[in-house]
Image (cartoon, rainbow, N blue to C red; front, side):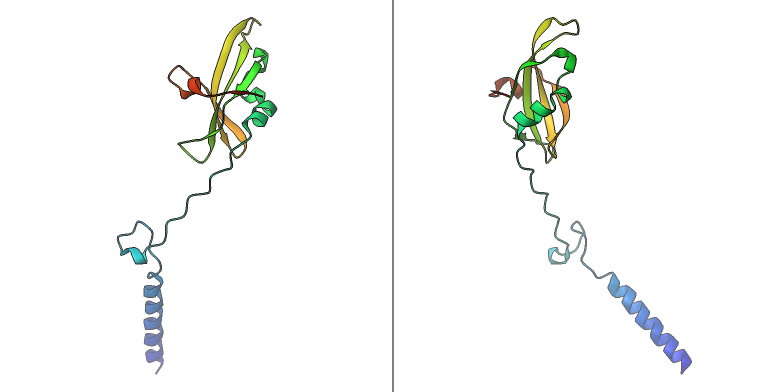
Length: 136
């Protein structure tokens, strides 16, 4: 009778292990659609940032402080096409390292979670050239 119990426990264990693999399949598995796990919904987009306030509070993250940026203006935020964040354009009249005016510099900033995480100088091919700006 002891051998019979051992075989019975072995069969139950095998059945449990076999059924454990019958859970919901990955969304990319080659099984019928009703057996696949639903793909996760994308995260909701961040609310549009207050670019004026953000640039005002973090001006040194856009322009070098020794350039003494004047007449600072910002564009409206636009969803970043590469991710969940936002982009905006910022321009100001700046000075060179020697203190002489060098004209207007324009940067595209990337905003994520309410913080400026990147800035890049724009060129003539960038759409910052055609944006509408508001003073901060």
